[in-house]
Length: 117
Image (cartoon, rainbow, N blue to C red; front, side):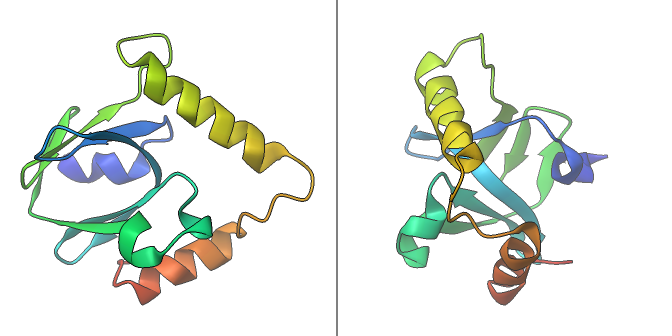
């Protein structure tokens, strides 16, 4: 079933219709499709770092939502640049004093942006 996407624990990447690829920091179901947050979203402008993608979730991996494609990030695979960005981000989160919001606050922010759950 396509909504397995929302239970994937491996890092994900998303390719936008213009061909740009991004690591997905946070992913949520949304009534219009899905809501995803970029790496370092909590340090930037929500209008630029949080994105709603409209469309039905299709596929079993890769997944398609509208004109966007999501895949599991191949840490030792095809996109080394994104894998390195993800590892740096994860190291930042593990650093003592990291200002990343706790999971409950992240979920509340996502719900405020219309996420389901």
